[in-house]
Length: 153
View 1 (cartoon, helix red, strand yellow):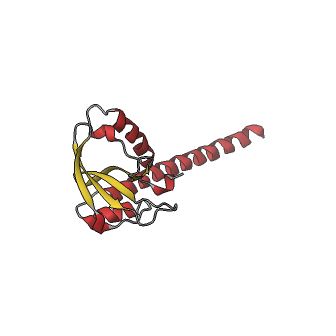
View 2 (view 1 turned 45 degrees about the vertical axis):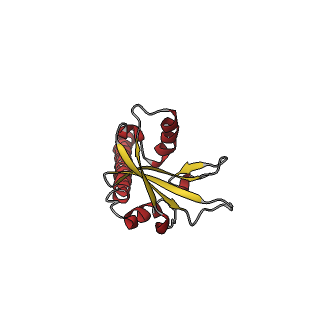
View 3 (view 1 turned 90 degrees about the vertical axis):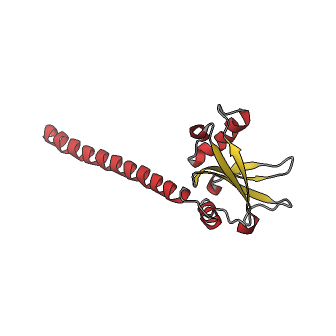
C-alpha cells in the first residue's frame, strides 16, 4: 500500500515542480519584454518623458536639457559607484564602456518629499535606448537615487 502512495506522490511533485519552473520562466520573459518595451525607441522628448513616467516620475518636458557623455573604459571610480545605482534597476553600464551616450535631464514635478531645491531626473540614452538613469539634487549636500521610484528609501 505504501509503495502505491509513493508512486502517486512523485508524479504530483514533478507536475508541481514543472509548473513552478514554467511560472518562473514566464515571469522572466515578461519582465524582459516590459523592460525592452519601455526603454527603446526614445526618439522624441515625448518618448523619453513617457519612458520616465513608467519609472514613477512626472517631469517637465519643457525643461529638457541634453549633453553628450562617454562611458569611460574602464569604468572609473565615479562610474563604478554610479553603476551600483543602475544594477537594481536592470541597467549595467559596463556593457557600454568606451561608448557615447546622451544624458537628458528633466525637472521632476512629483518628488514625494518636501524640499526647497529643484530635483531632476537624468537618463542616459544610446541608439535611442535607455541604458541608465537617476533622480538627484544638484545641492552640494544633495543626493542621487535610482531611476526606478519604487526603489527609493
